[in-house]
Amino acid sequence: MLNNEDYLAIFHEIKNSITLINGSLQLVAKKHPEVCGFDYWDETISEIDFLKNMVTLLSSIRLCDCKNLESVDVPSYMQSISHTLAASGWEDFTCELSVEKNIPPIQFDAQLIRQAIINIVKNACEAMHGHGVAAIHVTYADGYLHIAVTDHGGGLDPALSESVFQPFITSKTGGSGLGLAITMQIIECHHGTLVYTSRPGDGCTFTISLPATQN
Image (cartoon, rainbow, N blue to C red):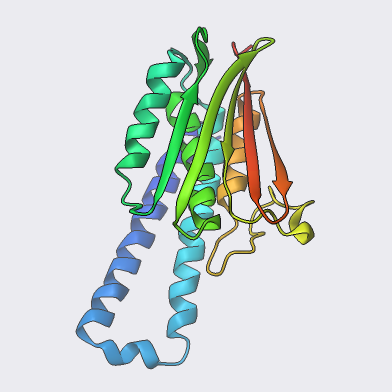
C-alpha cells in the first residue's frame, strides 16, 4: 500500500509533466501564434489548467495527512506573511494587518496555514478587482486563534451561499473554484473552522479559527 510520501511523490511527478506540457504549448504558441486560432486550442489549454488545479487539490489533501506541526510565534509569523503579500506584485491592492497583543504560541503546520491565508487574501484581491485595501485581523480567545480577512468586493453571490467551499464552484470568470476548497481542507485537518459572513453591496469576511494545540 502506498504511504503519504509515495502519494506526494506521484503528485509531484504528475504536476511536473503537466507543467512541461503547458510550457511546451506556450512555446508553440509563441513561435507559431496562428495555432491559437485552431479549433479546440483554447479548450486544450483550459484542460491543462484544470489538471494542474486538480493535482494541487489532491496533493493538498494528502499534505494534510502528514502535516508538520510546530509551535508558531503568531505575531512574527503574520508579519512574514504580510511582507510576502506586500511583495506579491498587486500594485493597487494592499492588506492592513492588525495582531492582538499577548497571543500565545499556536501549534500548526506553518506552510499549510500560510497557503490557506494567502488563498483567502488572493480571493479578496480578485473580489476587489485588484484595487483597494483588505484587512487581516488576528485575535485569540477561549483557546482559539482567529484570523479574519475582510474585503470590500461587494459580497458573495447568494446563489453560492451553500456551496462556496465546494470544489469547482466559482463566480469568477476563469476561476477554478479550488482555492477555498483547498483552504477548507487545510483548516479542517487542523481541527479548526473556516466561516464567512457576506455584506451585500460591501464585501465578505472569511475567518479561520484554529485551536491552540493539536491533539
